[in-house]
Length: 213
Length: 222
Figure 1: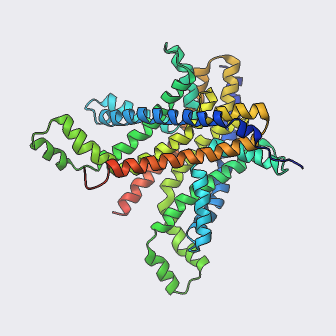
Figure 2: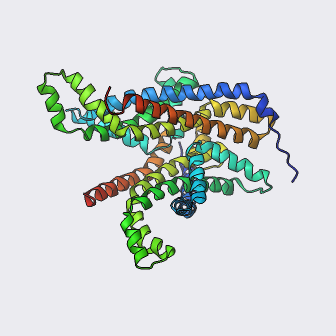
Figure 3: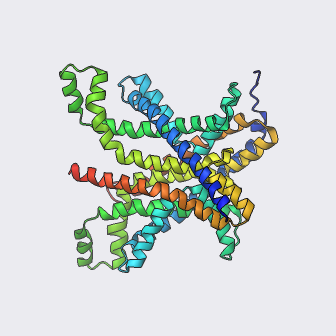
């Protein structure tokens, strides 16, 4: 494998990072909305959010990408593969992050919410200033765990035809006929992205476990 | 934009799709069986007295958990023939799913084993139970009971991951769907219906696990 092929893999890596970042950032916004709906106390909204989560946690990511990709074209939106795939990952991440953050919001002791209400804090301030800062701390290990899952998940965009790291690997391996070498290197590149995050996640988890003892 | 949804190709292909569902279930169950074996074996080896073995298990877990399944399945697909093992795509996919699920199973089951207090094991040995029996009855079963919910959700994730096996054209639902799609060009209809089938499969799996949970892992112990 020459330098040119390796640089091509790095271009793929760039798109993997970009796709993960977009999925995670936009998914965080969506996930927060889902988590708030899920804990809103209004029956209809809670059901709706729960249904959304169940739908996305009960179907393969690959299918979600396919359906979003072809579904958007169907309603007349002819977007580039890049945008369609980003929307797919955003919807996917919203469901998983929503479920993680629902759990963390519920893990904040009820007394906190009650005390805030007693101090006449309204819903927005109660959430923003009292509940969410504590919930975020609790949710951090699981959130980082999901980020790792999302980075690995972006490899599925290659099946839809989007050229990121896994697909770049596929292309190079078809050119130079050394699949083991190429996929080995691709695997190492993914590992270098995910492993530090995993280590950081378990470090936070241990610290949280000590703090709550 | 006058697109009319047409589900005829999907309904014509329904027998094939249902056969594909069985293929998916086969991949999932085969993968889980291997994952359980790797999981339990890995937990035993992880407490080995030899340092290289402990490190090998740790390295295996970290390596698998931090790389995408798609890359793993490609790697295994191309590596097996070099190792002199010629397998069809479907057994290859089952093996890859088992290896992937096994790494997660090691991590999960280890958590359960660590929750068993040392005194339990000593009590078992003091009662004259054989070492293997102590492991099976006193360590493994309560450990599995403790971690069963996480193990079950990991296995549902594994079931959903089977769709990636279509990348090496193993026989399962997604590859059947892709064939029907390429013949009919009814992409949205095909993948929409498949998504619902997957939803059904994962619900089936959930009820399967809750049955196992009440049947084998509930108190009072049978």
